Image (cartoon, rainbow, N blue to C red):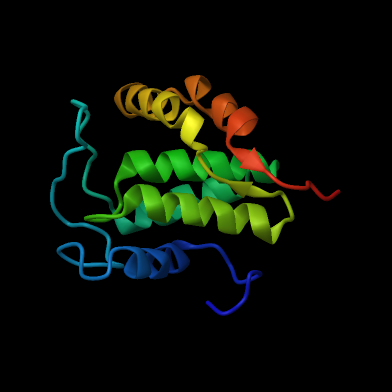
Length: 148
């Protein structure tokens, strides 16, 4: 993991989480093996299965639109709660790796849209319905020059 063009895969995601949640969780950079909850929602994410996670990452990485790929990965990973801690931060950094690698800008949640983002994310956690949050992210949270 020394170059922006390095492959995006589960090992990359684990490495990012190890930096994000170092000394903040039970273990860092390791898929969680126990149950967790998400504050404010009833949805309980299942314990991640490594083979299924790899399969899903590969499926997402085959999405043709780079921007859609980054958004879908971020939302899926946030909802999946792959790690004990740092899931939103890890997911957002990974989405930015995808965008930056392909010259598509950066993804950040501006302060003026934070409350709406959190409301939409909470609804997404409960429903797994991307349609109420993905365009919001595209329209209000991605910035930068898009190269052809």
